[in-house]
Length: 115
Image 1 (cartoon, helix red, strand yellow):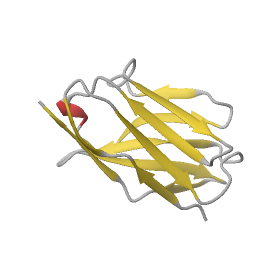
Image 2: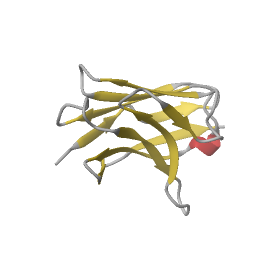
Image 3: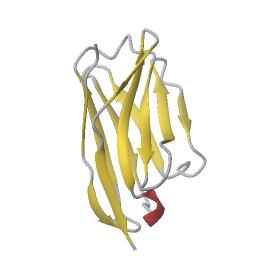
């Protein structure tokens, strides 16, 4: 079992920045993929970014050049640095982990970007 706890969401004006954190209950060194998804009201959950245990990253086209995902194995934490935020980034952001072929999700953290 892997428990994930997100933090760092909040309200920010367009053009601003936020950093989300996801703390795992176990060592993340062996977790093959971790990442962030988001779900806006009335929309399906969508991929934002992922990072492998080899540090390979993948981003949704809508966030490329603005968001950066990273993982700190020593702290068992994954981060999402979000810059130049836009109102369309408003959503609940969920931390994700794929470990031994099982998917794990955090409880989500709200990000609201005002125009």
